[in-house]
Image 1 (cartoon, one colour):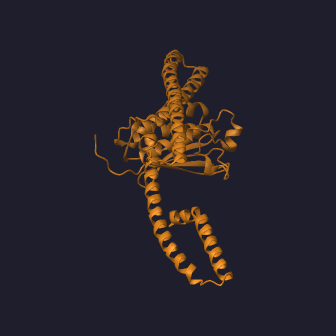
Image 2: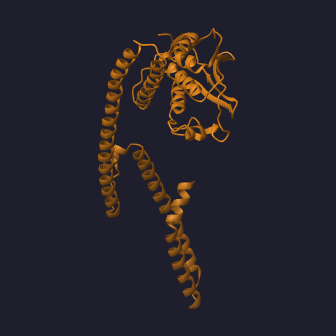
Image 3: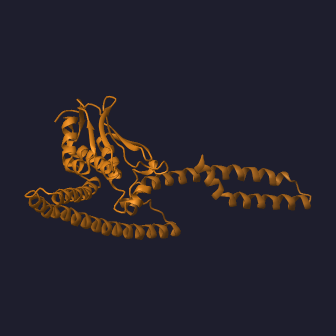
Length: 329
């Protein structure tokens, strides 16, 4: 119906011209006292023939519209399958579209090349920087002093940032390395907590952890990344008190801290890319990408992540690990 109304609007000038001619003949016959029926009958006959022509032309336009709609969904084939037309103006349009398509394809090719080159560079960089980090860790393991423990914690932060870069690159990659299996959730959580053990001890933060005693279907590596990011944030914004890891319901992992909390105005946006909020503006080192990556990873794993917080009371992050039973690998 919309197409028909647009067509009538486009052909409105024909109705105006035809009506004007009919009115001129009618007035002329009336002024010369000629039978008006001599105009009315031919006018009706012409109107009937014009209606048939109009219907035929609309069907032709409708068919052309469908062809062009199909072509729009296949950008690379526009010029190859464009309907032939002897109309000079349409041929000009066709040539313009062909040139635009060539320019678009060239721009797309150049952009893809630059993007791929950038991804390759940062991927190599992220892998290469792991070598000096590993060497520094081995050096620090030879001593056990407050300074070396602090440097070890800082070094682990650097490793996290490197892992964030690799995660970001992998998320935007066409290929993935997800391996879904049934895992013991306690093993995944304990492994993540162990990486922060020295920071818990050094800052005298209490860890409240009861065995979860449940298994989940997930990818161990990617879920570990999410848990480590959430724990890292909890430690970063909890100057004193405790961090509690518990199971809520059947499959929901909760990581709750007694930190500075999140402002109500910031809470709906903490999972957005680059959003740091009030806490991020206070902590100049905040990037606003950690929780964004957590949500992206959770979406890919079929999990959900949500947050609840009260300022000066603490923050609770819930990771719903409910997942449809998958075929075991």
